[in-house]
Length: 79
Image 1 (spheres, rainbow, N blue to C red):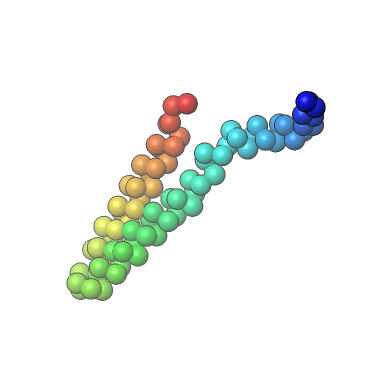
Image 2: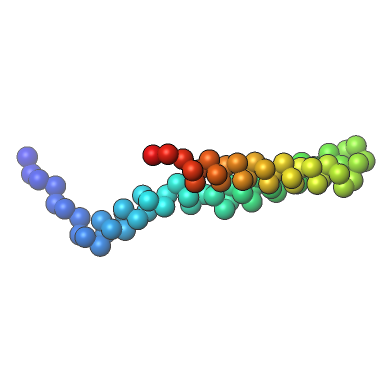
């Protein structure tokens, strides 16, 4: 069997770097989606039940809590 050629050292370092930061690449988008989704659901509920702006604020706060929970669960994850 033919032996696989080794990748060049520059490419190897880049792959290692991407493997190291990979778990953290979605944190920003997840935070935005959690806050935006909570605020949107709160806004929708406010329009439906006429409670403006309280459910909007509650949804945004819930989104912030969910976003931070996800952030810390990823950052503090043990390998």
